[in-house]
Length: 297
Image (cartoon, rainbow, N blue to C red; front, side, top):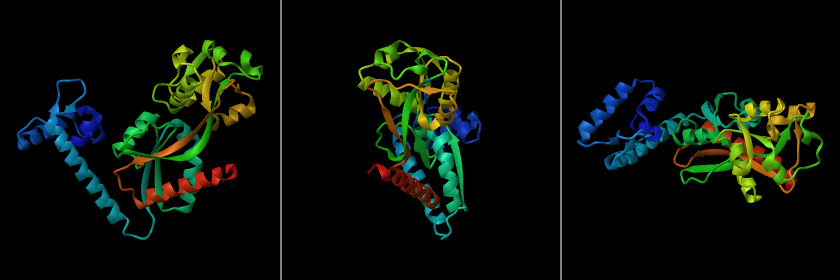
């Protein structure tokens, strides 16, 4: 409970996740503070933060949680039969377009393993991996963090698209200056596509702040539907728009001097010992990525 409160910066969020009431969570922390004879959490700010004593407790408590997880994993792995459950988190790109096929293929090879997939935005997936809610995560953009391990999962291209009725639908290409002025649909902050696109635009000499943003539409699907409806141009993953491009609901528009390739990544906590089932799934991802890239070498 104490680790979850520190991780979330909130009594109420931690209590909700552990299925207890907020007063019960507060009472448990007050009892711990009485036992140790010191204040462990600073409650004076909007986000709850650990005091110096709380930082010490958090460090040791996290080690205890890690040891407990390792104990359960090693005992569960004593059996030779690969079984159990793997909880995977994913951002919308890999979660809706890459993982369903991969997880189905993995399940055929390992019928005794149950896989649960949860879709969220990239930032939330990473945080929930580090909070040990997910054994593995799949995301479209990763910021370097010392407690996170990232490996490539699948190759993707992010393309600019518009509706077939848009003036750009018949263009061979557009310039960065034209892109800056055109009404633009973006995904919410924390979305992997937005992060990658903004990074590439900066490197191409176009600060994202110059874009003429007219709609902010959450994640991939809402941005796609807004573009189909004629709300503006937007950047989307090719994985997400194959049917729309084939059937003419969207048109890909090349941008002069800009090509955005990225890898989707599988991420895990550096300090967590993976279950045998999660290790098998990670190996399966590695083999699939190597096989998919082999012709390029």
